[in-house]
Length: 293
Image (tube, rainbow, N blue to C red; front, side, top):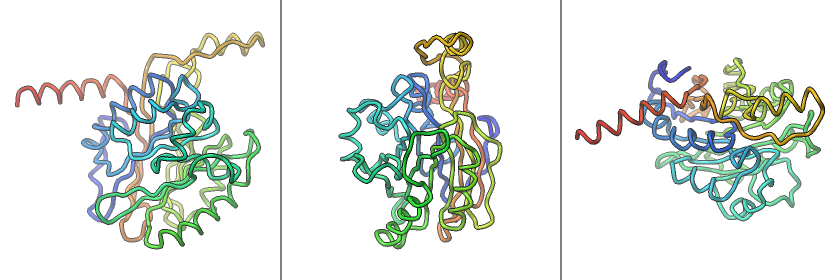
């Protein structure tokens, strides 16, 4: 789905959740914050969750970035392998209820691994995230971790039906395995980390919405969000160079999921690609309309 191909409104028996892929640097933060109004009004999102582990100059999350996202209306924030890159965020991780670190880090790791967010007056959305182990740094087993989290959730929030899992992993096979592992037990399982959106969105046999990777929110005239020349030169010549965040062709990528309020399962889902120029035109039109009124 691109911005001029909006899906129909969610059915009355569903809530619409938007999961946004990895925010990269200042360009990603800019469009992520500016997009919330569009996601709420045009896409009719009831809840917006964003992965922000690359928001601070391409690696980590600062306190001011966290506050900016929340102030613009983001409901919850997930992180990944760069969770502690900016150590200042540890205080927020330990005190806030709307930001989580991966659940399969050691138990002593700072931060919460589950957030339960209110949606309206009666519903709650539970969100957890995990790290993969293929081509990633050593961590605890994500499959055992999700079993533990779901068991704890059943005890602490027995009436919760809307449950999302984000798997921050490199290998698509890992993500497909996790999708099958949680199918029928959660509303949706989506991947992050590779910065490239996959075209495999589907509803698994047990009713769980699934997509291997949400993609990136940031500059697409780049190598995964970084300036092309430096990455190319370092690759060709083997000389380490600083990889600065690129600036051109900024887009927001993510996925919307319609979740049944009664069963908790996914009724429909689709990809989102929102270009910054499209969003800017939308916001300008809204601003002009308000001035006229």
